[in-house]
Length: 150
Image 1: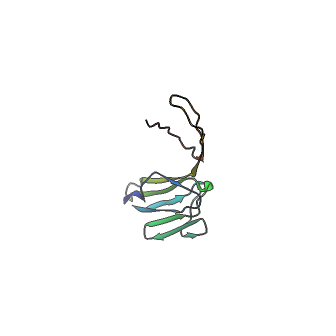
Image 2: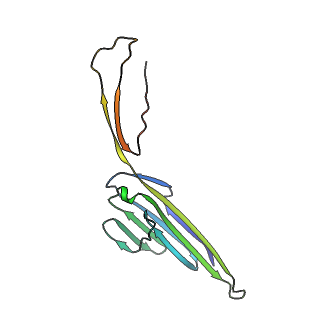
Image 3: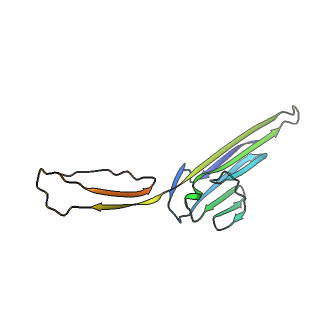
């Protein structure tokens, strides 16, 4: 028997994606004897391999499973997980030994930020105050650092 082991490539834990982008990851499973081998999508439902549709493609080459999420949008946001369990029953003692391993990546939806800057065209005298209006949109909400030079 061999303990369950899952390797996920790339090994990053979160990936930020915009509308329409695609992302692929691989899961390599090792361990024997296999009790359970599963890949789940953002909705926590199993991704069947092999699979080929407009949104998700999953292919198998030996113990390597490749998953490609296409046309990414907010509905596909969430964790994608590779899970493996092994179980060995000792023929003499009849006792079972289990092992499991899980790796996951979170695909996070982001909307590119847009900035609208309103500038007053009046001449400002040194020492006077003025207001600078900046409207920013994006998901997650972008942070706006303010810098003053001089």
